[in-house]
Length: 327
Image (cartoon, rainbow, N blue to C red; front, side):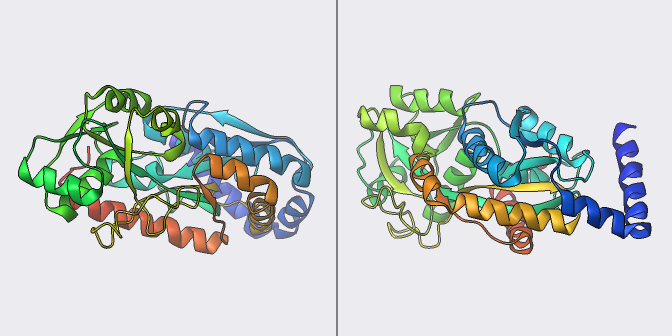
């Protein structure tokens, strides 16, 4: 009933918009007149949350209003996504969106929203390759040696993940497919648990963000073999990509962007897009983003819409190849 009510409300808003466009134009011109909320589908402290807070803080001055983060963790970001999809389309409730949102449509038979229909893309924020790491006891110092080891011992090597359809799971299975090897998944409740499992030798390998593994890397608890994008990480130029290490075409990156509920006036979307672009590409953001292992990458709302659809298709194809069925 709640979702039906919001659908009716959105329909009524659309009718009013058609009847009274000058009023909406006036609202857009005066935007914003109150604080803006950016909803994050993860607990405080993670990379998405940290990035969101960095952007929110920098946006407050040019927009002339406080921009705050609202954490709504749970259900693999479904709770946060539904919260924003059901919000009034006035530009005061936004969503930090990323990989999870484009994987969910292939993993869940029914979602309380449609990522393409119910959201208005604002802009991509930043991208970052993941990295492939192994425990120091694994006798492999590069990707070719790891693949050779996996082929010589089918099913013996394992990898940490945070569940079916999670980025670590998808990246490891993509490696299995492309390298024609078999490594086994060991799921954990969260990324921190999987990282500890790798550092203690409970699992042999793990795909992770750079920032979350730096303390273990610096302590020599884990070994980095390669990054997952087509380009090397600027902060780690000595780390080769999986693509150049033999798995041609391997490309799986972390990314984050901002969306609004569908129906937000175009003028508001364009204002947010312009201000986000200035903030994210500013000199003041370069070092903080680098510490997260991320690089700024903004685009137009139209380009971000195409990007989101392409990621939904890519993840759907990969999930079908892996053989995971929607719940």
